[in-house]
Image 1 (cartoon, one colour):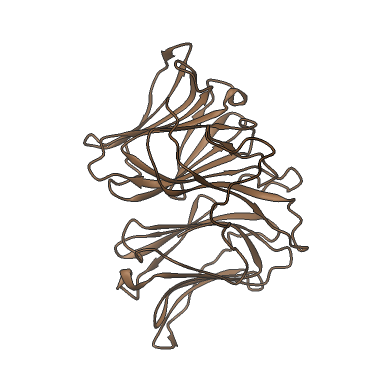
Image 2: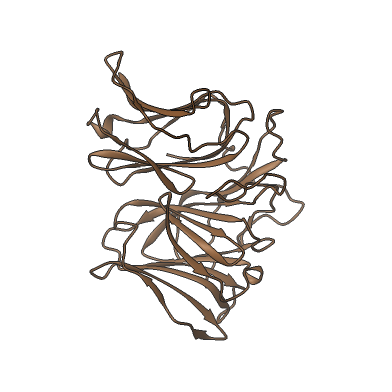
Length: 344
């Protein structure tokens, strides 16, 4: 599998907040300065460990027939492939999961569902658990794949097929955080991702663009505005003394989606602000966030509503009150939290 020479933006995120002692490097992200050419392959320094997540962001090309993501035991020809994740777009679409061991493919495990529409952006998360890989697509759980090859043998990731790759993020669990139901551990110092063209040890990082500024309050542009199929991914940590958090999807004159977890009331409030007037609140009966704990939030835009996923589980559905989706082009985040990853 060939390595292609493209200068990446190598981004070890550093947080320093006395309220949440998570360690030094929370997350390592490889952002490409332009769309990464495919095929792509690179070494994962330190390999895999239980609780580690790999998050890929990209776009399926229009008219794609298939692509795949491999977790491999080496980069040489004929290397074992611990996990082969292979969306195929023959009608009906489906995804093949398999393992290649001792130069022989195993039995395919197929799911008759196509989670990544052609021509649309996507997020793929692979979480390493003791007995399986937990695979999530666009923020929702998709499939579990039991280990056939020890995950400790994996040291390489490769991507091939009709797809564009924008970023790869690696997250490790912090060993001191207690587990939360239905959610993996969190981020700890990590050595990161080593493509073949990376800077040799001791030479420092090249002068690529500076790392994203995740200072709270945080504001960023949603490139191209919203549209059906658009997904916004937000990872972070709730402060130990959290009271309220706000996620706003804005347009010029208002707020299309106000998503407001309130720890003081143990509810999540959803609303819309148009012409400087708030609409009727929609209140959930539960709070899927936990003080002092990490979270993964995915807001999926559909033709008639938003689907909100928290830690891989669907938490809320909110019908569009402002329907000019392309006008919604700003994401705002404020309140009692820290951010480690935003993809908008």
